[in-house]
Image (cartoon, rainbow, N blue to C red):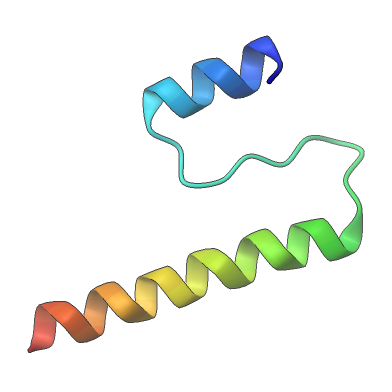
Amino acid sequence: MDKHREQATRAGVDAYVTKPYVDIELMRQMRALIDAGSTALTTAAA
């Protein structure tokens, strides 16, 4: 794990993508965040 990613992880980031990024990796990270948000909203509403 590189230094910046490690610092960001300790700070509590939900995702970390560096430039230049691969489109598919960015989309995968975004989908994971969206799915996690949907789950959190569904759980909170219950």
